[in-house]
Image 1 (cartoon, rainbow, N blue to C red):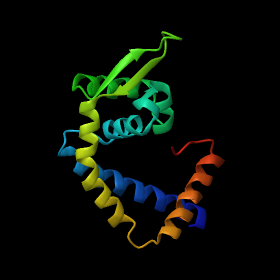
Image 2 (image 1 turned 90 degrees about the vertical axis):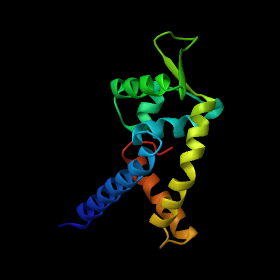
Image 3 (image 1 turned 120 degrees about the vertical axis):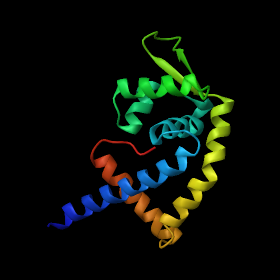
Image 4 (image 1 turned 135 degrees about the horizontal axis):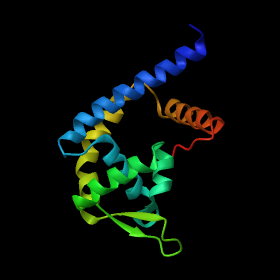
Length: 145
């Protein structure tokens, strides 16, 4: 197997393990991995708001998928959905106080897991790895943040 393929398969394996372990943590809060990602994106965005399209682009999922996730999050009181003033075809999502509390409650266990997952790396190595991943994503016209 060529080195490029081995690296890509390694990234996929790491990603799948990360998603599986994260999902187990989030299940305690009755959240899916995707639902948590939407909440986390909104929580870290300006004013806690973002368009559904922008979130879908960051998560690399279809509009229909984001719509389903948003409906479930809204039904549980974690977000609100509004029609954008400038274009009624655009839907904005905003994290609620309940959603922020949920993210904060789930964050400590996930942060501990993240640290353990990357414990073999120094901060300098983590920075280098992060920038390498950014470079890969940029070369494929994708965004990481």
